[in-house]
Amino acid sequence: MTQEISSLMDGEAPAQEADSAIRSCGVSEEQKQTWLVYHAIGDAMRGQSPRALALPTRVMEALKAQPTVLAPKRRPLDATFTRIALAAAASVATIGVVGWVGTQGGQGSEAPALAKSTSAIQTVSNKASVRESVPDARDYFAAHRQLPSPELYRPVNNRAPAPAR
Amino acid sequence: MSDREIDQLLVEKAQRGDKHAFEMLVIKYQRKLERLLSRVIRDPAEIEDVAQEAFIKAYRALPNFRGDSAFYTWLYRIGINTAKNYLIALGRRAPTSTEFDSEEAEGFEDAAGLRDINTPESELASKQIAQTVNDAIAALPEELRTAITLRELDGLSYEEIAQIMNCPIGTVRSRIFRAREAVAEKLRPQLGTSKDKRW
Image (cartoon, rainbow over all chains, first blue to last red; front, side, top):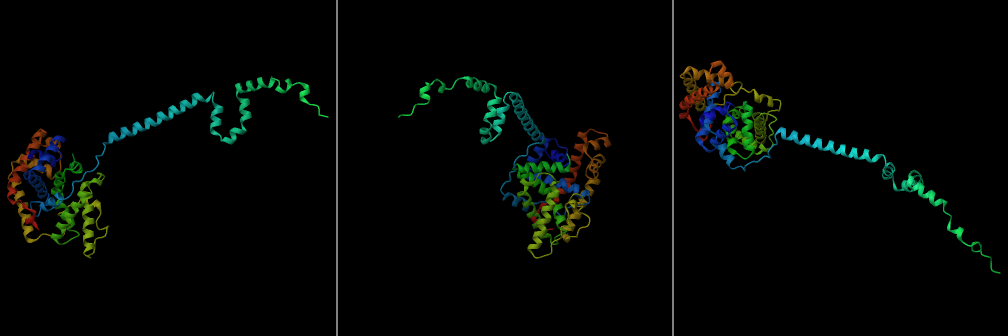
């Protein structure tokens, strides 16, 4: 295990071994001391000899009294990128579908589309032009214009009753 | 894996609730932080107290640490701010922000430019530790001495050392470990507790 600690402090331990070394330092005071002494050796070799060789027990005791911190787990970069890419693809697909639907319906439904986009007042004022622009309606009105008015069927005398004398 | 990446690994474990991972960071950086704080505070006992407070603040703020800077740079800023607040609370002059900037933290060589904050006892202990390490290194077989020197002084990776020493990486790993263990065996009798320390 001490060899794993040695590799860990050199940054040469594979992930699983690093985990194992960190865990062992957590449960064993002896391994914590190994971590301390190995660092002290490096410091002393670089002319930074420590003033004492002791575990920082005061800090460690103060730490024990602290509530355990828990930070939200950060998503790895590739997962974030995937999410962004999926969101962008979904947006593009939505825009495409809406655009396609609009294009397909545009030929025959220009007038309704226009009517939808105008206000109620404009709709009322445009009734005549709608009447003329829609072929079915125009035919309908033309057919009905040719029919005689019901007044034509009334008897003549009924049309202008003689005044009572 | 660089030194920064090792710290990041320990930070991430601590952020997931592993206090022992943070303890390893404390063990690694306590001496360095205390030496940095000695540039602001003169009294060794006060330095120790401020360092402890800085570590606790860092632990509490750990969820906010995003790894944009090195852990030590971040810890350094917390340490300096804690020291400034401590001095202000005592009505003493705190250093201006230009006197200490975070860029210093990365390349800080704590042997140079520091006040001599050693007491005669701690100075003796420091010399003893240095002497023990030097003697133990000198007594190592050459291949072990070369391997640990290339690693600790030149900062080479195992792969680079393997190329220089013309041996497999596994052998380098084993040599460095054996060298450390041989030196550690000589040092362990000098292990004490921080309660004995007080500089």
